[in-house]
Length: 402
Image: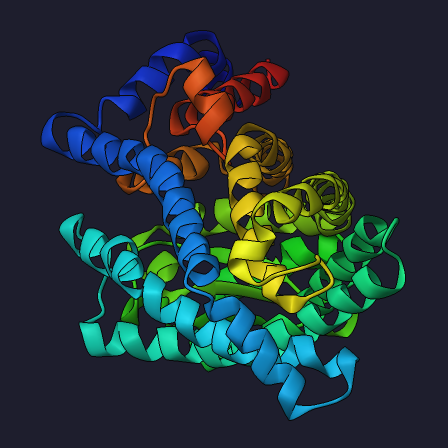
């Protein structure tokens, strides 16, 4: 046994092992993967363009001003008007965005063989999402416009805290109340793999006594898992694609990665990081929106930012700012993902499982981008980097046995 380990350590070349894994994706499969992911770069741009055009139409044709006027006629309570305004805004915006959504989320997914839904099934999920938006968005809007009215000079600060608070509440309630609206969650069948997943969780002080499997295969071919929730809503979940399309070693590698997010406190760190992002965003909105309204507001029937009718303008500016901040947002997430990768390798001790599942993810992620490309467009480490780090981890473990 010792001699075998010594021989393996002496002959194992992590770079050669990495190339061997990368060679399993070639020809038409690699071209398809690259085309899908690279097409997503343009979707970022055109998505922002669509948002700006729809926002312009809502302002230019006076729809936004009419919705605000209708809300004012329905109620004399000024604090309630943004919530009422949100109803036609969400419905009309969703309708205008629908052709774009059908292309990006349904047609394109089928073109690349990633979707398992027919149009009616996809539309049903979209309708559920719309109903949730009709409940949540009025509350968010009501809170934000309240601070815009009451603190004209510092509303950007209070709006940031409001959005962060909603994100935190969403993280708590989503696993229990939102996710089951789209998928059925069932306890994972008893067996060695379930015991190994829970063993990893308990070894890393994750307070979970069950593992849930959800039926994502009714929607997509993608593999996925997560450790979601906060406090009493913490839940370890993996989708049925992960169970059905990967080996036990790959499942353990993925679950080790997901546990890393929880143990390393990425939920809280991301909340802080994205709070800083929203602070910059709202500060720029606070600075730019009044200047644009001073120039064009009379044409749109919008006099001030405190009027809910200004929302399309705020959304248009925000979409452009988010586009420009793409490298920053991706770097925040990619950094956490790289840390979770390292944690998962140590927790699961399945480097080949992690390398193999990284190759499976290349169905919809470009495997070998350039460094600038990865910095700008990747919110996860590239498949090549993930495989290489797994093989380097394996080499270190083999060397430690020498």
